Image (tube, rainbow over the protein chains, first blue to last red):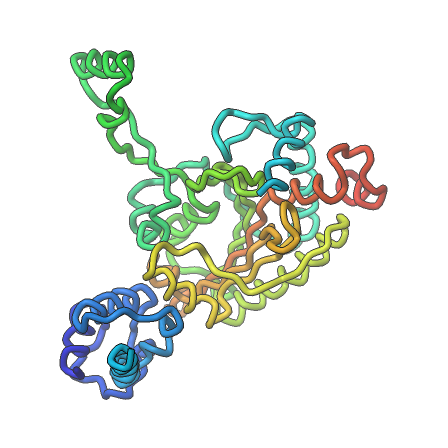
Length: 83
Length: 303
């Protein structure tokens, strides 16, 4: 999952730095992720993992770092499996 | 909804607004305009000493700048573009025939011009300022007013498609522009009190489009980027935003290349007055006959 997220981030994130340079815990907003790019990233992740972010997770925190995204995606997948 | 229709009907009956047959597109009476003029003078008295540079643009802007602004990313549903007939004589003939028969949409052949209707008074400002070069270290302040267009037909007289927005826009450091915004939040409350309007200020968000927009809404609210000054007009439960106070962080600075003297990216903030909404709040609160308005309110507006 980490790899897919990194690929998507590289494709739509529009970051001025290489995604490979970023630690999993690095603050993506500090790295230059704009509000709009985070929306693009959200849509790309939904498509890649075939999930839909609930409104409650559509916020900056969910996309604050690569590990935050991993946790958010895992949480959505888990909720879906439980349902 | 009934209340909204009835206030609109009362405004029509009193001749303050003039029905055009299109929801949200109204004429204004001399009396209505007089209230707006008086309120703008009040704004000038409060804000004039700040020394803002005044600029007035017509209600259309350069389409290239509109595209660069990213408006279509966030509010495609609200935008209005200007299209014109650009054909030859033959095209003209088929156009007239099409209009006469009335079966097909005659506007299909209209072509986009270089003009887009201005969505907010400050939109033409940013590229204009960027062209001038770096901003002084002490920042800059601008005073704008324009008719603005938003495609949202409604029977709520406080939600018009063509309306006027008066704005002050501040550019500078984060501290400078957030101080500006706070100052106007305080002034806004005082101003409205001085004309007998009960107001509240609340955190707010722009009407970003679609599901992706939900995320922009949440981001905007989480970061306290937008506040609105609310006055009950057509509903007490959902009062109407008559002023907004927006902090754009460095997003416009980055987008338009607005830099300070030291080369750092400028932060920007704007405060907007919805002039029709303020006039409507006054008519709704004090009655449709301005001669009956409380003396203190009349004195504040007309001296």
